[in-house]
Length: 219
Image 1 (cartoon, rainbow, N blue to C red):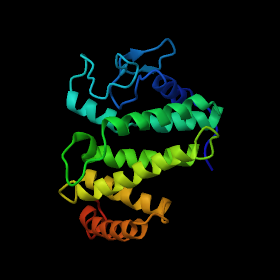
Image 2 (image 1 turned 45 degrees about the vertical axis):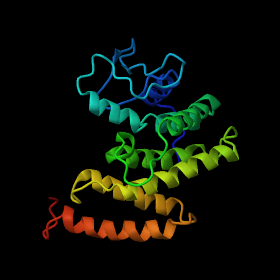
Image 3 (image 1 turned 90 degrees about the vertical axis):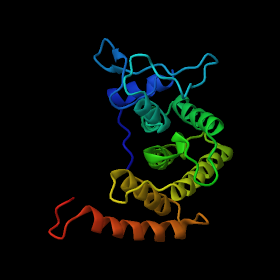
Image 4 (image 1 turned 180 degrees about the vertical axis):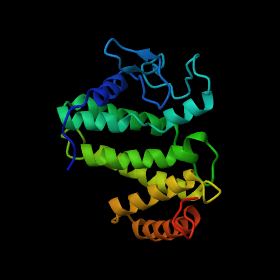
C-alpha cells in the first residue's frame, strides 16, 4: 500500500520543487527557520527550469548537473500529492517531464549526452515507475499525460540498452540492470516487455557472479 502520511521533510522538498528549488543529495543553499534544507533555485529568466545552471557555491559542478538531470525531486512531489490530494504537485510533475523532454529529446544510437548516460537515465526510469504508481489515478492526469510518460519510459529504457555503463561489475551498471528489470515487471504489456525481461534476467544472473564471491561475500 502507498503511504498516505504527510512527512515534513518530504513536503519540504515537494514545496520547494514548486518554486524550482530542486532536491539534490549533498547540495543545498542553507536551512530555513525549522532547520530544514533549502535547495538552490534553478529557475530560468522565463520561469522554467534552467537545467544547466550551476550555483556559484557548488564545487563539483559536473556532479551537481548530473543530479539535476536525474530529477530526484519527483517522487517527493508524488508522495506529497498522495497525502494531500492537492493537484499542484501532480501538475508540477507533468510540467517538469514536459520541460525535460523538450530540452533533452532522447538521442538516437549511442549518443554521449550527459543527460542520457550513467545514472541519469536509470535513476529517471526508477523514479518514473514510482511516480506513476502514485499519480496514475489523479484526476488531473489526462490520457495524453499518460501517453507522454509511457513513451518517455519506453524511450528511456531503449536508450539505456544502447548505452550500458562499463565495466559490468560497476554499481552504475547494476542500477541500469535494476531499471531494466523493474520496467519489464511494471509494464509486461509493452511491445518489448518480454525482451526487456529476458535481457534483464540474464544480466541479473550475471551480476550474481560478478558481485559475489563463492562464499557469499560481496566483492
